[in-house]
Image 1 (spheres, rainbow, N blue to C red):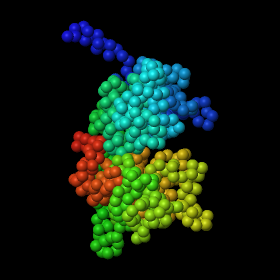
Image 2: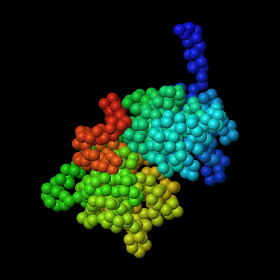
Image 3: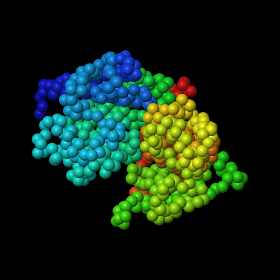
Image 4: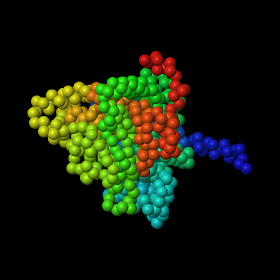
Length: 572
């Protein structure tokens, strides 16, 4: 039996330990154009993270979330500087630390999980080697035991067949596996604080849940303090003890997660909540119902054809020549109706993007048939989209689909050049028209894609696809990397364009909250097979297949019933 004095001493030892993170009146600025005086970006920010506690930073792009995280971690770019306040990481005052002073704290005191695994891992080194380097930082594991420790870490973060996976290169692992590798690296040396910068924004809901469950388990097991950066308010409510709401580098409100998000006080927080699909589940429903009723009225008057604009019939696709390799698609079928939004959902590897690329005429298929605007697609490997004037693909990452040397004007004009519009005056006229439709300022035309915001890049991608006046858009995760306010703007724009140009959308997304709001029909894919398909209300409200129920169960829950409606009425 433990003596009371021993219990008191143990309690005192825990409480006397410094907090994983204390931020007091932090100011951060960036120098630009050779100026020695930095421009303030983050001002007077204060919060703290306790042992075993998760604190979330939320806000729009440009609100200062990542700047704060990088200031805390000593990872500001060369032109970034802490101009005021203090940052204490596990008792170390680090605000003025040089790279040399930071070196012994990396891994052992602070771990960092970035958003994009592929840009954070060395593509030329096996993942086991990269984890081993993190293990050796702590200096507590004998060299002969490092390989076993690497396998143990991979098993700890939930990677199956860990002894085999240590020899894999990053490109050989899925997005969820890569994120787990980054977490293994971050916890290898037993840090006190873990910073997770949007670690799940590009992951499907089931993988996202596994990653977040893993972080929660590590937090409880290791007593980690976690600073979690996210634009997903449902995740913030579900996974955080406290929340700090940021706008333009200033704290608008902060406190316990439930207090901030269920009874918000600041108009900016209320606006974020109204833009979030999870907390505003009826935002687009009336508009979708109105459009559907309008279409049914037209069809009853026989003014509009009821034939599918895209029809996929029993399509199968296998990558590689080995007949024993698994099918990427196995007899998949769907029909996209005129002026409708048909959502394609499923986990990573379910075949969503493969089907999208087949429909867009960019990938061959082995069996079945695909019809676009009444014309059949050839099965053989295409050189280019044969029906580009009828159907265009909008990529998840606009930067990956354009020449980085091109200006925005050149990006939008390029399809016109490819399709033989030789008159410069006609190209300028069409670009000016499309800019107005997607609400892009003319000042953006001279910039390159990297020089405009994420929301503007997505508008550039839409302008480029709409310049040829197609009737169908295939949208592959068009809003997954955007914060809720920019996402709401893009969704509103898509609905406006759909109504104005009678467009039809095949919409791929892992955001089932958004799909529930905007989709007319849903097709659910699992391992290349369609497991459920039909009207969105039936498939998502009354799913018949266990896999669909599993996807829905993984969606972060926002307690909408407990929101204070008077707060929203006050803001209007």
